[in-house]
Length: 584
Image (tube, rainbow, N blue to C red; front, side, top):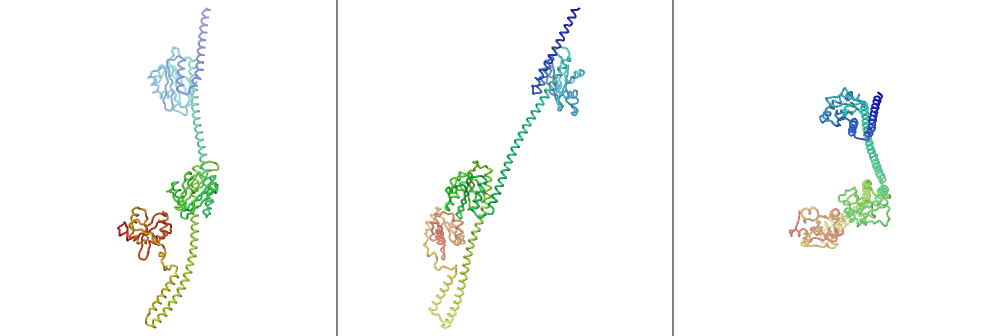
């Protein structure tokens, strides 16, 4: 009896020890599974590990985990040991499973996250959706958007699931749900960090853009202030040299330039204006009037400004100004400007005091300032022209008053002569009546008196006719024969000039000849001959019985410095007799 009791007590002890060992194994597995699940960041991988741990620990032949999305009513199946038809049925039955096991999923306002729970056995098995061999079913809901369902089949051993097995599964499911929440929280935190970093980058870019815009705005304000100050200083100035000096001083102050100069060239007046700052007087080379016609084309060719319009400024590469005789120093930035076709200039600024280069915005500002400066300079040049015209007008008025006085005096002399004429006429008439015939002496006396009166009258008028034509007193011009002139004509080496009035020129002239009427000589010469090479041969023709237009025009051309002027022998008539090219 005692032996039987001892044996029974020993069996109970062994069962208790095995139960304790099993309980400890489950706790140890649960403790090891918790950090393993927490270390995973992929929820699908985490769920797969959870299923394997559950099946391996309890010795289950097959199982599945169904992860359900309450928004799309779709599921993701992770399984072990299930046949394909069971897996396919789980996928198709996801909406029915959500409806049956998660009825609050359709009422979002009433659905709140719940813990893990074991579904009652009365609900097993669900032959319409779950595998037939499902023996345990655990449900969890980590949040309102997702829920999970794990089903386990029969154990390898035939015993049913005990309370320790159920507690283990519930604890492991709780660890899974906590891990899923942690992963989602970490995902949200990472996303928030990424969003925050993106916001920081965007904020940094916004701050940089704001700083850049503020810098540009400050630059624009500085440009406007510089333009306003320059305009304010130039208003009221009416002297070319003074306005150039003022503008140069303002420009150098605006850009902190150490040196600078402005050169203005007038090709009509042959004047050169040079102003400079920060340059030694010995360094400045002032172009002479004779150099202007050579200097301006060099500017235009160097800067490629053949299309430079009046009142426009154009940037010039600094190295292109280095060889120009009108530029006193090497500059860091230069601009060529044009007031009109006869007045051009250049503005050059040396390096900055800060040793910085000129930015594109500063070059744009300098070009704007020069354009503004040209407006004032053009007004000053116009004002000086008006002043000069006024001085000339005053001189002409003085000469006109003098001429009027002379005409008045001549009128009085003419009146005296008229009276004398009347008296002489009266005496002559008396003598004629007395003698009733005219003697040779009387005729001679009359001619002498008439000649004397004519000479006195001619000299009393400012526009009187010269008694001896001036052409008689000059040396005759060089002549050229018609045949030789034709050779020159064919070679294009000579310029043919028609000296007759324009009406005669329009009727007939040598083909290609230029009309230079004597009465309009100064005007036409300025328009067509002012830039002609003084060494080029000029052949002049055109005369009639009373006027030798060709001789007089040839004399005037020679007076203007043309060294090779010849008169065509025989004129247009001799040319036409040879049937050489003529045009109406």
